[in-house]
View 1 (cartoon, one colour):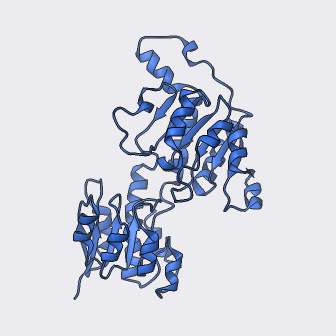
View 2 (cartoon, rainbow, N blue to C red):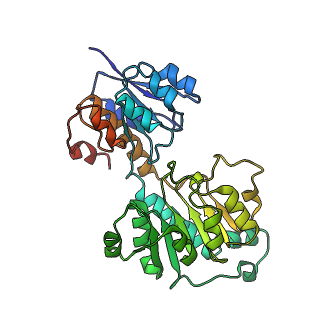
View 3 (cartoon, rainbow, N blue to C red):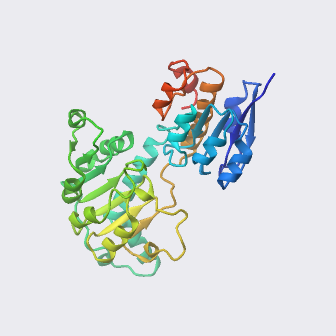
Length: 342
């Protein structure tokens, strides 16, 4: 029996037990762990792979062109910015992600950042631990009820956040050129332009995926129209916000503060100017994480490989739908296989 080689290009977990559990029923799948850092590492490990599971290792055009028989690349998580989608599509390789594994976690984290910053919880904690007991260090704090939350992007995560903030009395608006205005209205959310959102919102929460068109989409122009007491939150990807423009806006007090789970370059540099600012809350790209979410993400990434290699189907979470013009697989709904993973 010819083995199907599945390479995990890189991972930051203790082991690969969840991936192994998914592949266990299939004796012809060989899971090959690697810890690639460069394109050359990936080429050496994956040239003859039938499938790839990817975390952070770069899968650019050079890597894609080197793959001799790869049928599917799945990625841990939502973003696929590590993968050259055009090259993969041209090569007839399915690319899949896991878009639904951490919706509550990210929405909860964005809400936690919102509440922590607006109630000055982190700032107050720092002062109390510094032996200063004085509420005035938190001034000003404003009542949340009646204020406006602007969502940049209105996919599943920001929709979940919109539901979570309703009891707080926040008005919610959103910018998403791909979401129907009627459907948003049914959820009690008004769609508007990006600049109008930035000008109207007291709190802005960024949820757009990182693509060529969204990189730097919140920049100097947008900061210039924001309210001076505005807060911006980012739990998507760091480069969606132009970081230089953000730092300038904070230094010049064009906005009041920021709460960031992601930055342009991770991990953040030890001398990064954001680290010295009191009006910033920073967390280490942890919004996605819970024990349950991690297991679901890893299991579903592995199941995307099973969809293609074992069942000859398009993966459930196919990203590059254009690949269907180049390859022909079965179109099915593998809900039963995935049900046990959630």
